[in-house]
Image (tube, rainbow, N blue to C red; front, side, top):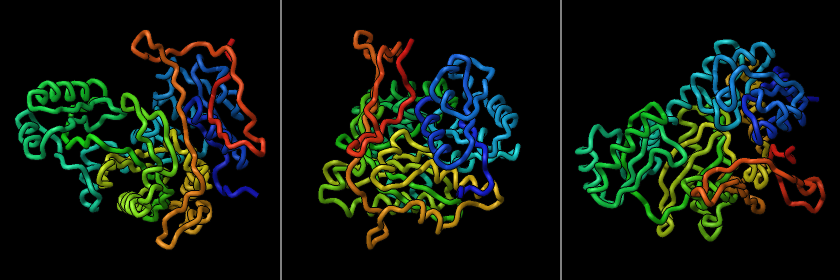
Length: 404
């Protein structure tokens, strides 16, 4: 018998690998999946895998971020819930509000949570108010004179950040005061151009730092479960390349750090009665082990799969179960159900115990002759090992096939 009492039809507001991942979860749990696609994606794997597919009126990637069109498709397809995946509209409070207005559940956090954590300076303030360590820095900076004063107080090197930025965009490192003026102008300009938000703030730059993040899931009633940490320090151009769960830095004699990280992450999310999946990211000093709050991603992460493998949890199913309770008029799933579904082992301190290690590698297609610019093209031969073999230790989340 299905665990789902109210939702039956799930619209997947995305494409590619994450859409295929969500569709697979729907099939495993007796839910009907509805894909959306632009004309260019008509033969994509997520379209072919879904029970139904609805054509969007837009062109290319832009079709997937037109809120009015996507909501209209959700209404016409009689979807009970919309799952956003990552990217596109996954962190759009306007999208969440538009669905709610039409009586369709958004499988994600509230628009207020998305707003609060979406701007880095407000997320930083919330972390400070909840005694979560933050890197020495500032609130929003009004001009270069203020930036110089703060930089002199906390000491160089410093980072200027666009408050609405992400993925390294709108970020500049400055080692001297003479670099700060040009950097300030650039960060403000890029913020306005890329994110329609010129706000910028400043932080101390930790040169030897690690990027370690904590997976959390909340039931919207103040209970948040943390599923350990992931190490995401191997990056290029501020983009993650290899992720590992658990963090080898933490595992190597620093398990007390795990307790500190997951406790802070869960406490921060619980302070806003966070619901659904989220990831709290920390900067960890490689020399001292001190850690600082970076940001919270209010969505499912690309690397969620390695957490699922190590902690035996299905985060997409949890998102759908949370949505199911919301669709029935309740604030979210009971604490007991979240504990049951998040069935990993817990130590005496209430911290989830990892079993084994999982490593995710992202494959990039780039052209080295053109400064490693993205170089998509036809895949002439695609073949994967059989994931179902008993001895297989591979999980392959993808959306590709041999091209024509």
